[in-house]
Amino acid sequence: MSIDNLIAFTAKEFHASLITPFIVDFTFCILIEGYDVNASMTHMLSATSQSHLARHTNVIHMRLNTKTPGVDSALYVFTHPRWRPWGNRLPPACPKCASPHSWSDVTNKGSTYSYFCRRDKCSGWCSFAKPEGFEMCTAESNRGHWMKQVYTV
Image (cartoon, rainbow, N blue to C red; front, top):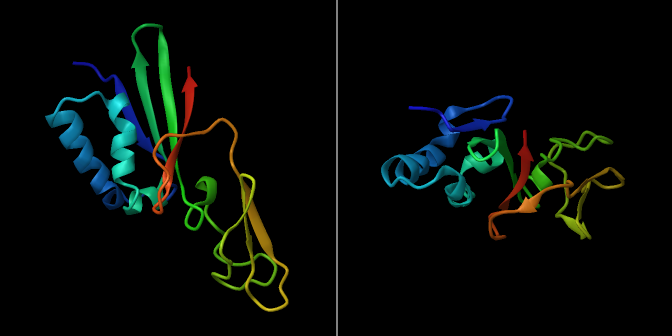
């Protein structure tokens, strides 16, 4: 028996209970049904788009490449304009006036999401540009979608 796949979670303050839906789906698809992990990752992540996993952590999948000596890796990042713009968390407070949870609805300009402070006479704002090297790997929906960046080592 060998380990050909590794799945890791990147949250600094990781809460294992929040990945339960992913583990259940992994158990059914991979361990019981026998599907390939690489081919099933986008399906399993798409199924978790409504769960807390999507807002809590990014997912890394590393697998041994048997054709060429090396490791293929993929970083999966959840994105939603309101909850995690391009995989980033909105600041908990406006950096200018310190008003908590003061962000307006998203304003799109190209592939940049911008947010403005709703407090009267405050000019605070923040914005997030789409990161380079990522491709969308799940269908876009009201509940967000996952982006993927591939690495080969």
